[in-house]
Length: 570
Ligand SMILES: Nc1ncnc2c1ncn2[C@@H]1O[C@H](COP(=O)(O)OP(=O)(O)O)[C@@H](O)[C@H]1O
Ligand SMILES: O=P(O)(O)OC[C@H]1O[C@](O)(COP(=O)(O)O)[C@@H](O)[C@@H]1O
Ligand SMILES: [Mg+2]
Image (cartoon, rainbow, N blue to C red; front, side, top):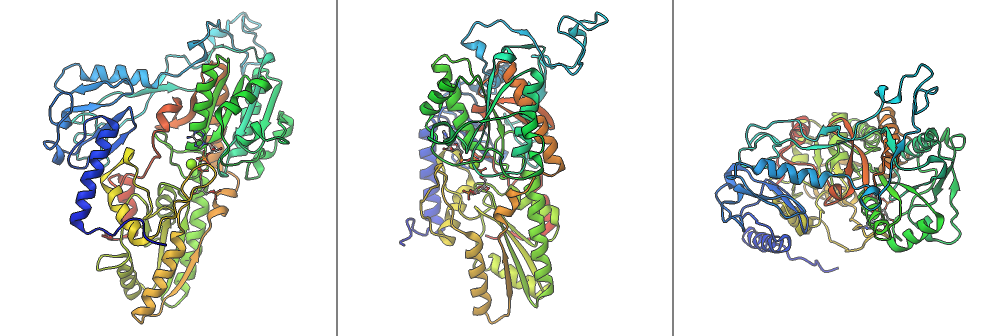
């Protein structure tokens, strides 16, 4: 097949860089820096970015005509901040509060709450316990004004490792998000509630743990009508797929196995048909377990329910081994995937170590980010080269990976390479254009052909970087006449089909319970997650603007480099 993109030399490459920046600048209709920002995150109507000091004088804010580091357009309400204005921080925070405000069914309905039926003190009625102690003296509930801090590091300079700054001085700005948990007042009559659970996307360790906890918690509130929607969103409209009644008894042991008790699927999400089905089935609460695609779907369902004025709470729980959802510490399943992945790395190490000039090669999943590869490399401690999509690399040439492998065979006698599924193949997306995306585009051209094919959900189907590298390594050592024994391991589906490990099982338990508390509190269009070690609710809109990626300037990536000892490969 013909390469759709010509190979570019450095000058042309710069030119493409400039053209893309112009496109991004037009698309986001915000100010844009003429040199690549250190980090940038934007959507069509929102753009939030920071600059390194070295870039400080080089671009201009569209509205204020000040140098770009003095302005940031940070909100969906299009607030543009002028950092010379002494009240910029207050403006930022007001806007932040608006963005992170949780949508709730009372936004469209005038509903009166009722005292909760959720109590861990079994013998107390909402009116008071047998000793007359009123429920409101029991401090087991989360107050609606409780908040958790999203960021806790105060960077003293934008040049601090991994710094994420709002203004050029990297001032301390409080970014509060809503604390998750049971509220004293609820907006549903549990006896009348019909609750549904659906699991979408690819498999992930912990799906069954979350399903189980949602059922347990719903029953604790007094819900009797709980159903599972089979095979993802497809189960809402595909004829012949029947909803499954769920109870504590039925789901008691499902956490002992991996996979999803309800089944999963990709694609086929037609929001209006799904909402028709929700209406016809008289579902009041919908719990959606999935990744970024599923979250986008959940938000669309939430919006459509609002449009139709349906009293339905849509609450998501972030699932993906890729750990690629914004703002949260991690998604459930990620820890387990890393643990399994390091077993594959260990096997590759043993094979390589035991062979004459052995090269162990492991490919790990991650559709758009290298978190599993980075963490498995760190946890195993056996990796000499870790390649992730966020960091550019070349295979050939003086600074290429192959030359380094030669060096490792010569000095150490063997080596282990861990490559992330998307390494060298991240698509350039204008809305999240970063300096290194452009280099990745180049390495994509050098490394692989793009087929342009997508899966049923619209995710780009990547080329097999593992097989490609295996062939390249073999050919290279044959060409230079050095023996090399390459052993390639692809543990892909083994990594995600297993049951959750201990830390994921706890995470699933908390997130599942909190999802139910969120629905009873009347929230909708939210996700139940962990941020900065605390359990919180975030509006779905804030977590789906782009996939989360490894920050090459972060301490974690630097630690990975320290551990592998690899050089820059470009
Ligand atoms: N932008 C979107 N809007 C609505 N539904 C979506 C969107 N993207 C994906 N979906 C639906 O969400 C489900 C899961 O998406 P997928 O990308 O396969 O997995 P994941 O949610 O794990 O990322 C699929 O049924 C897909 O059709
Ligand atoms: O072969 P499948 O089922 O399409 O899944 C492949 C993808 O699933 C994942 O494991 C997880 O993806 P999701 O979280 O989007 O489901 C990716 O790492 C991988 O690219
Ligand atoms: Mg996904």
